[in-house]
Image (cartoon, rainbow, N blue to C red; front, top):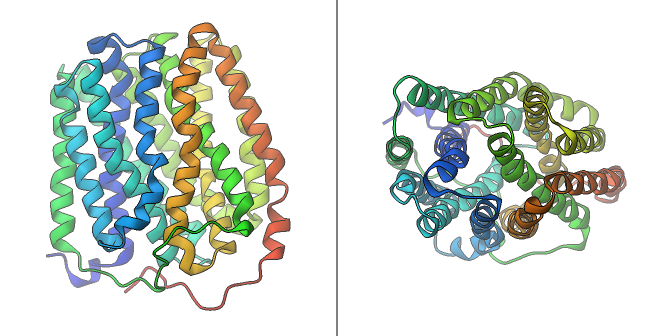
Length: 394
C-alpha cells in the first residue's frame, strides 16, 4: 500500500494520466509505420481505421448509463485495463480487419477513461486552481510520453525490436499499473452528487459548438499531419518518436505556464490566440514542401493542444456542478461527431488532394475563432453557482 499521504485524489489523477499516456502514446507513435510496413495501408485504410477508433468516443454519452452501476473512479480503472489490453495485442494482428478490431478495443478503454477523467478533474478541482493543476497534469503526461518515445527510439534504433514486441511491452506496463492503482487507492467521495441522466442545456450551446470544432481539428492533426510526415517526407518510426519527444519536452515546460496564463487573462483571449495560430499552421501544412519546416509546424501544432485547458475551464465556470459527469459524456460525443466522419471522408479527399484536407482544417479553425469572441458574453450571462467544488486533497 502507498503511504496514506500519497493516497490523494491528485495522486490518482496523476498516476492514471501517466498510465493512459504511456499506452496511448506508444500505440499512436508506432501506428503509422506499423500499418504501412506490415499491412500496406494507404490513406483510405488509415482514414477508415481512425474513423473506427473514434466510434467509442462518439458513444461516450453512454458513460452516464454505466455510472448507474459503477462509481466513476472504478469505471476509470476498468477503462484503463481495457486500454492496456488493446495496446498489448495490437502487434499480433498485422492485417486490416485485425487492426480495425484491436483499434476499437483500445479505443473503448481510451475514450471512456478520457470522459471520466475529465469529469473527475472538474469535480475534484476548484475553479481557482483548475487552470494551473490541469496545466500540471498536461506536463506530467508530457513527461510520461517523453519517456515512452525515448524508449521507442532506443527500441527501434539500437535494439531493432519488432512492432509486436513493442506493443506488448507498453500494454503490459499499462496493465501492471492498472493492478497497482486498483489495489493501492481507496474509493474517494465526490463533492457533489452527479445527475444520472443525459443532460443538454441551451446555456451550454457555445461550449458544445467549440467542442465540435475542437474534435475536427484534433482529427486532422492526429490522422493526417502524422501520416503526411511518413508518406510525404518518409519519416521512420525512430524519426516520429524523436518528433514526439520534442513535442512533449515543449509541453513539459510550457503547459503549467499556459495554465497559469489562462487563469490570468481569461478563456476568450487564450482561445483567440489558439485558433489564430491554428489557421496559419493548417495553411502551412497545405503548402509545405520542406521536411524540416513540416516538423516545425507539427511541433507548433502540438503546442496549441495545451490551450484546450481554456475550453475546460470555460465549461467549469458556466456549468451546474451536478451536470459535470453527464456533460462530460455528452461533450465527448459532440467532439467525436466530426471525429467519426472526418478520417474516412478526408481519407478519400487525401487521395485526390492532401492540401485540401489542411485548407479545410484552416476553415474550421476560423469558425472556432469567430465563435470564441462570444465567450465573455456567455460568461457574463451565468451567475456563479452556489456551493463549492472540493479541492484535490483528502
